[in-house]
Amino acid sequence: MPEFPEMENYRRLLSKHIVNLPITGVTVNREKSVNVEPEVFVERLVGSRIVFVERRGKHLVLHLHDGRRLLLHLMLGGLLFYGTEEERPDRSTQVEIAFGDRILYFMGLRLGYLHLLSVKETEAALAKLGPELLDRRMNEERFSDLLKGRRGALKSMLVNQQVFAGIGNCYADEISYEAALLPSAPVQGLTPDSISRLYSAVRKVLSEAADIGGYMELPFMTGDTVTGSYNDRCKVYDREGETCERCGGTIVKSELSSRKVFYCPDCQHER
Image 1 (spheres, rainbow, N blue to C red):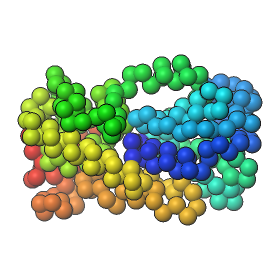
Image 2: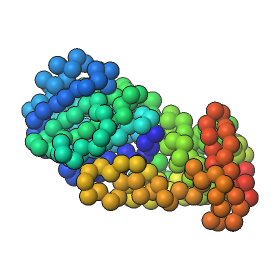
Image 3: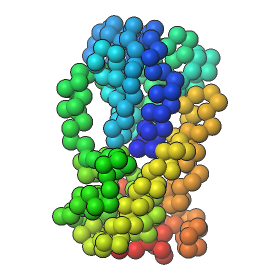
Image 4: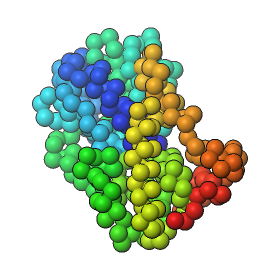
């Protein structure tokens, strides 16, 4: 599932390529991917312009020039591609938004969605999300305060969108590794030093992953050499049986609260 780095990478690319371009055509191939009748969705978008692209957690919010919003959540398996009909990947698309001869293809939206909403509806849809960990207002003291009173496993807390917005399975494991903490480490047992390491790990992993395009499998457009670059940089996620580059141990895979977890049992600890 695309997480903060993947969606932030998309936000930057969309901001560069589609902002202020008139929408010349819209195709809805799957009615369940949108929240209004396809005819209404098309009618309200054609002729509009996207003037700003915002990311909130794992969501993208596309601000239209008339004040309405397009709320995108890719969920599991969702992808974006921007290009001409000739460049289009050989995949089914659920929604297509055309900007002249270039089209923004929304693929893999079997669980995801693209909803046309008012400002108030958008705010309500995102109201329960926790704070952004790379927000300029976030600091180590506030981060530590957010952990106070929390119980349970570290990974379970990191992926809880009402605690922190944007982290999923992959980056929870990568952050835990960077902080030398087990994904199963009890949050209530973390020392001030381990919390400090965790905060530093969050900042480092999320910012670095976003800067090199996250782990998406498909380029955003022809010639895109950035998107997906983090896939080869993962230290533990999906690396079961491989050698830990930090200590030489072996990365293992297990399960925690029905989620798969990857970690090094030799250099990751409970605090």
